[in-house]
Length: 104
Ligand SMILES: [Ca+2]
Ligand SMILES: [Ca+2]
Image (tube, rainbow, N blue to C red):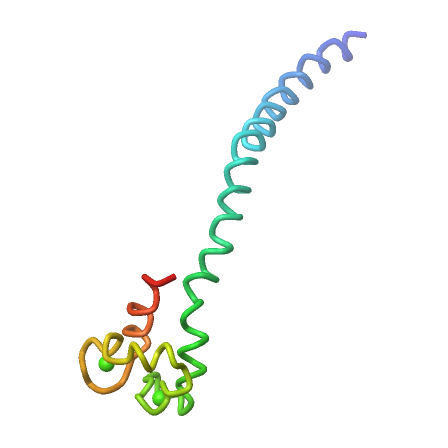
């Protein structure tokens, strides 16, 4: 009897803070990270969206889309001068990204 009465409060003392710790982080962040995780997922897809086109147009993979390469996309060809901001006659990945992104 003596043994049980000393163990019970001890067990309660240990179990209570554990329960408080377990309950605290699971409650507020459960909605936080879940919403945060869902948000970044579509973001990279939208960010990368212009780049598959860039890679597709850059047939020789020198990371520049020349006017010849741009001919495969009527839109890029039409905006070639606009996209080629440094006017070196080819569109770099950065130029492409900058020029195409505000559109989307
Ligand atoms: Ca190229
Ligand atoms: Ca350029």
